[in-house]
Image (cartoon, rainbow, N blue to C red):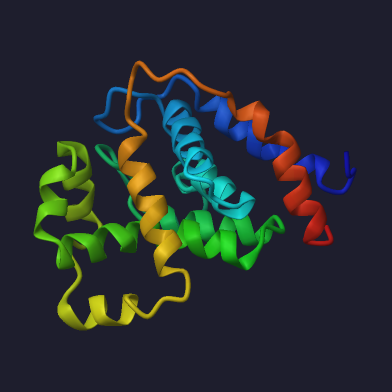
Length: 190
């Protein structure tokens, strides 16, 4: 194991494991189950390692406390996308991975603005967080978001995020991503 990546990998895994029993905002899964399922869906779809790790870590902003986090009792950290993006960059994760994490809320706002049927697929809890996150994008914001270089993968992550709410799911635990995390951080020259 790359010793320079070791402390960050341990911090990330501990953060996710420590959240293990906490309910995921109105859903039938815990925060840890949600993260593990989302990463598993990415793996099943043949995503690259950065996208798999972004899927695992997309809600890390809910698990950290910074001066800039905006909390809501019902929905956790409202700006968890941006808080998570910044936190990951500070720890040496790639700009692409951080951008994918930072874009997953805007992907929901984009999809609800451009696809009326998408709103109907959202769980009640996801609809409530959408409202707190600013609701569907307006037309000019949606047009700008459509030009995001990582749009396709942000939308894929968003899809897996919505699918990752099955209380009966059984799959690989967060610790199984340890080597992938080490490889990612080692490539970043930590």
